[in-house]
Length: 162
Image (cartoon, rainbow, N blue to C red; front, side, top):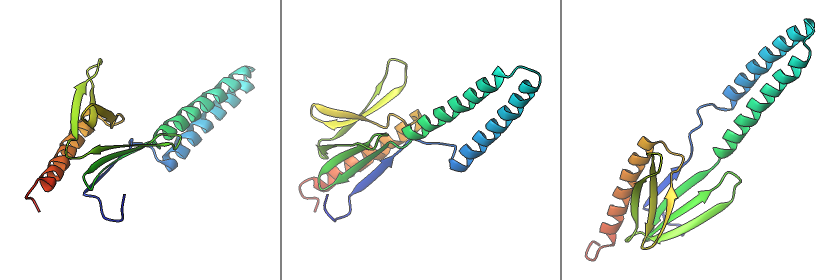
């Protein structure tokens, strides 16, 4: 892209409701409760329970870390100089970029086998799925916003619109 400002720039990322401070609080509380319970089990002679309680804390920590890693993914959809560009950064940090002519670009909303919805963007015979991590309401709202942006882009590119 050049130094000029894009016509439309959308950034999509998964929502994570528990921030770093909340994570530390939850893990601290869980670890403290499991430690106190573990000490009580050791006192009554059931010392193997302490290991299982520690394993519980470890598994919850791993699950949170995996969730936060998945939350690093990002999709950026830009309409600029007649192109629709989709940049996707996966959780490992790798980036993938697709470019479509904005004049011909369309969004398609399809139902999946479980009744949910999938949003695709593309033109001609090429298309990619976007917003897989969005809720259905967010997906519908984003599709409406994207369709508006594409329509404005097509209107600006039409002959005699200068």
